[in-house]
Length: 425
Image (tube, rainbow, N blue to C red):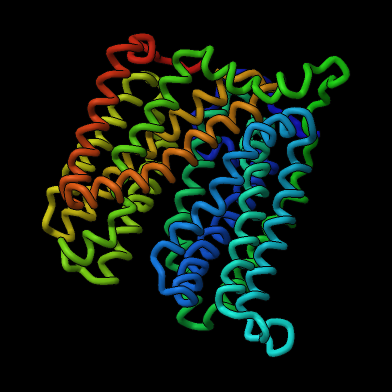
């Protein structure tokens, strides 16, 4: 079992949560896992396009992972609330290791085992592996998020959430670049091999986390159907939490310019592949800088106001990016937008963790996953559709204006969020 520090005043220490060995190991496992996932996603995209030369095939990669992840999320959250969360995370990680090895095998030019596979058959096999990966990540997400709340005292939740989000963002910056470098050096097989090694390392690190989830009495549990929907009932019964998730959903849905970055890099900014790489890295780079600052200057004294300001800043940066014709200025707007989004993510994540009873944390985290997954996937589709109707610039600017409208509407209709200070319920 984990040993917690006595409840009391949280030390004003940038590294407070990291002083707990179990949480340090958790962060290392999260960083390594995310790095591997980012490398894998980058290489899968190149491999699929190389085999098909069809842009639609790239969109189907995201769909192959998102649909099983979203459809299994509520059940996965129920499992995370009724079983040991560390063991669930380990089991899901082991499946992801198997998926990485499977992708390596499918990418390896083996003359006997794979020589008979045609390109379409190989693509179908890759999609099948991605579907399995989506199911595993559906179980991993609520289990690991709920587990992080068990590894530090409640007084350090804000510091822990900031480190957790910042570690993820740092891996999101490094992963695609590392994936591209590995692909250039050693091709598909080396890239997937490193991906598998990172996944295995994450498993080994998580094994060293000496923790078991608190025992829960499941003998008097609700019927499974009722229990599975417990997270949805809780979220829709908490106006402040629902409004925070709604802000995230619609800001990404309307303000997501990332899906259109190839259009801006190629046709508007004339920056080429190098410029596209810089544009893609800019939001995560801004988020990493923001996360470092948030460890020293947490935004929780006026949580609701700061959440609304962060979403407003994200919308304004989206509009600025859409109107920019300068590559440095466009990178700056994307970086500032990523920094604003990081403030929103940290506040929303801490709000979820602080306002949710421990026994419901897995199921509520799964609802959060559905909101995030839906907004990212549907937002990419919405951006592409509106760009086809109106052009890329108009689509991005209108999306930014819509984000401002959502923030204003939530501020008006949910005054409790606007006045929210500390996050404890």
